[in-house]
Amino acid sequence: MEKPKILVSACLLGEKVRYDSRGAFCGDARFLRWQEEGLFVPVCPEVAGGLPTPRPPAEIREGRVRTEAGEDVTEAFEAGAQIALKLAREHGAAFAILKQNSPSCGSLFVYDGSFTGAKVAGEGRTAALLRRHGFRVFGEDQLDEVERELAGLGI
Ligand code: SF4
Image (cartoon, rainbow, N blue to C red; front, side):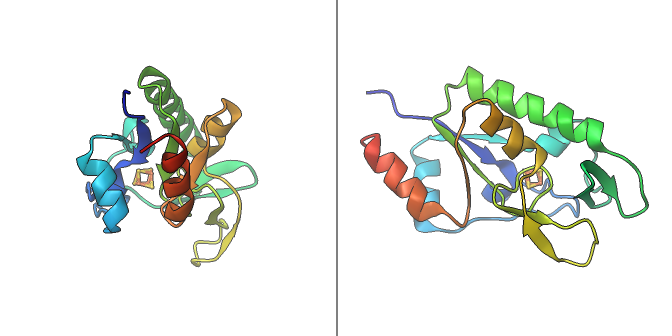
């Protein structure tokens, strides 16, 4: 049986694609094993959407994505979300594991738009688009659930 594919936030693999040119390496042994098994399709929606690294941090407020200086970067975030969706479809991804809290990748929580580190329940642009198109999205803080999903798929 062909192994399922999982769309993954590139920063969780340690790729230095975050706004501050750092990664967000996920060292969980299960996550590393799934990577070794070739299950992952990495994507950074913000870089894919044309934003540079480093870049000013951005947060969602009143339905738009803006930097602290007020620049509206929603269009680039939406473009990156579309590319992530295309990749998920092309690879027949079973689901996604995306970085929690990000205005692109957050799936349960996002920063609240105040640039104070406060979070609110919500979804980033890519997580929301993937879900609208039927893909389940988990955060790196939900690997127990991912493990159960994979067990259900025989992995
Ligand atoms: S957009 Fe997603 S993959 Fe890219 S740095 Fe932010 S959280 Fe990581």
